[in-house]
Length: 482
Image (cartoon, rainbow, N blue to C red; front, top):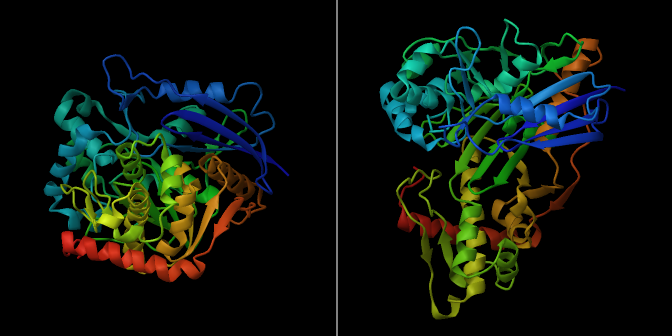
């Protein structure tokens, strides 16, 4: 038996879990918030990386890491940390879905010859959040800073580098690299020409190491594993494998699944990421998920989503013919950036609050089912679906999801699966270094405790609701998925 730690440096907090290497049992944990305010003169999307270290130190206080043999680091994805030739930050890190970079994203798409060219090159089409797009924004808006950039790291790369004492060697993992917009999960190689296209010159990029490799060892003898992005760490912490998909219910929604190969999608709807185990994580994103529920709750004068769910349960599947296309802020899947939502099927008998509430839940889930079908249409097997996010606990979601998705739905108990995934990676690297684990096979930790929901007899009803949703979508936006 050994002890390892997993670090989750999210946009808002640092959480550390300490786990048993053999079983994954949680032994203890620490937490600290990140500073709320941006650097002086900066924006919320500008963050001094030192804040991450301060939060880490606070979360690890009180002897939390005593006896720990290895640490895995996961961190927010798409956070770009530009360094100069001496290893100092050129400017605050650019984090999150920085809307300042929307024009830069469009510029990059055109510069390489369109969405298909990007999908073929690196498995994704530039969005405002991608590091490659942030580089383009930097070159256009802060040219003096851009000229000083010599090294490019992401949040987890920078934290690993700091923990190791800022060595000459800088590393990253496949998962983190696959979200940059200048590394291809299909070829396993950087496209340095895309860095130059965005930034105006070349920059040093971290070495991509394998899932079970160690980034290094601290002077105190603490092993640091490769690290990874938060999405990949969460998938690893959940223990998903081939045949599994994860549907995440945030303000926007995302669907990802484990697949043995990278997918190049010319439509741009699929982002081809690598995972933390050597497999791949194709991801499809919708712009509208819980935000559609919140909008409906506000329209109906309800205080929260729990009240909306309670009201929806007074209706029946199909919402008496009401269909809500929840494209309230445009939509990415299907690609309808300038559209609006649609409410169809209004009749005197359907014009009741409970039916609108039910239509909001069904519309959100049908939109995510469309995203699942994008993956299924590319040969991705989906037998079991993990449903994540606070909204996954709502009775209206749990009542409708299995039949609308057409698969078993698993609702894991709330836990910091990102930090757990980072700890599992640390246990893997530690075992490989000690000769007790195979670098091809991660440690077999206990699966997440969960509620399991089956489609059962409601499957036919759910598929009828989906057909109704599809009919309205095709009538309103013909050929949207072609």
